[in-house]
Image 1 (cartoon, rainbow, N blue to C red):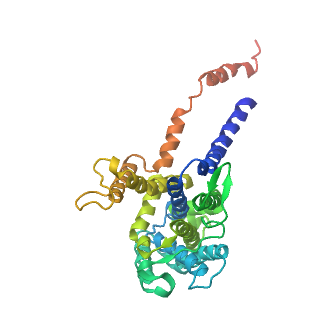
Image 2 (cartoon, rainbow, N blue to C red):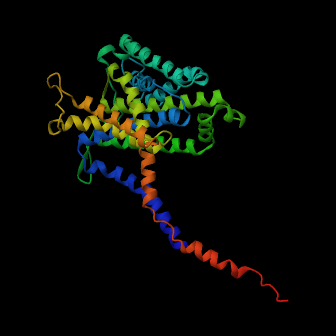
Length: 372
């Protein structure tokens, strides 16, 4: 009995530790292109986890995630750059995340009282308002051309060269570990929220507000808190995206970005941290890979080709649009649910001998009847 239990524990910890070890050794084998794809995917995963908490767990539809990503990205650029206060970049990173949370807090009274499609339309207004501010506030945002991103100390190619095991570590490799650390922080905090009392309260709130209120859940407070926490995750994702892109422009933080994040959590699985991560990797990496290998793919034209053909970005949107339709039709719980079902099918069924032996052993414990 103890040996199978020890084996099960070893497999359980192996499934947790092995992916972490694999992610840590990737910079020793991958070039800068693949590391940048991974870095963009990590940033998208942080934002998708936040939206998953809001939409998948709390049941609040939000189309304004791009706005809070922009607050985090531009907040960091302004706080750490010139013109701006010129704060230390690490302090600017923390303050940018808090600034995104404060923006979510200002909108939280609306999120606490409005739900469904009405909340979606209200958050949609944030995207258009934010895009207008980014274009017109030239002194802060740089206008249409955007602003360059102040790097973190020690995360640039001009810093003293670092060589580990014969592999030179430039800015891409160093930012990879920063993104991995921020994603790990996001992963564990989000899973802690979901497994604790707040997660149970948000799930009850999503299923039935009346039942949640009867059980003692303060509906408006929890919905507002979920919006603020999701905004802070989005702000952190915006900072990491800014560091990876090295320049922020207003057109990136448009409505299409909010739609991309909704696609991430639907494809990955609503209410799941792992599902949001898988969906973020799929939606983020697909257009980048199709752009790189456009000349080898059928029906896809290389970037900058003539009009009338499908470019890699459009083709990627068609593909994950089709993925959304397939998910909604055949596996509503997304990639996470599909993986769970496949894992369940692989497990061998319990042998019926256990039940038979228990039935056979039942007469042995009965008291003997005395013969008259």
